[in-house]
Image 1 (tube, rainbow, N blue to C red):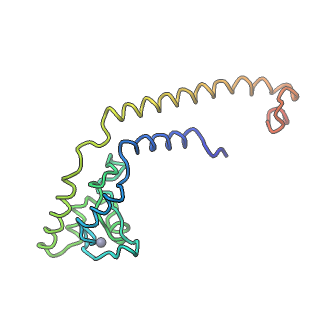
Image 2: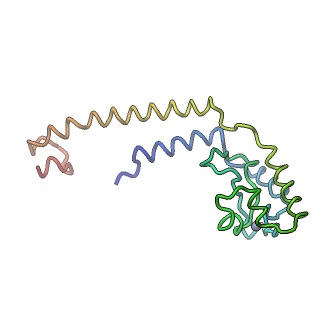
Image 3: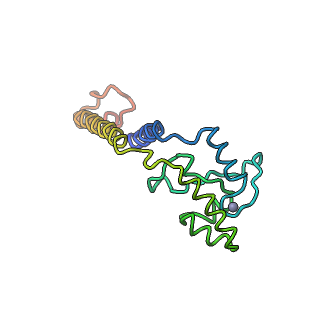
Length: 175
Ligand SMILES: [Zn+2]
């Protein structure tokens, strides 16, 4: 099938535009995050060996729920906490479940809270969303126009086998 279907293209286009205003954390920002969490999982507190590449940047508010790619919407998490355990759980609830010691729990809660508090209010502004939507709408219109252009040709070639110059065209070859 087509490698670049309109829906795939639309998805890529939308993400590319969002990345302009909501880029993934830069290497210096990732550096800052590691030092804020002192190389430990923000939830369970285990030490993460950086070279092991098992540290994850956990999206605190998921992208699907309007969470941004901003570094302050990420915390450092071990593979276990980031993967199987946390899932859809709210970070504060997850902390309640993960850390039994109330003192330790409060300490971690405060550290995560201080980090999240630095996030900008609305990284993807309504204005930016509107601009992206305009581009997506124009794309949809163009796709619809192209599809409309294609239709009469396909129908017209049904009766006459020789009218379609493209040998791969199924309507010209078999009908
Ligand atoms: Zn962990």
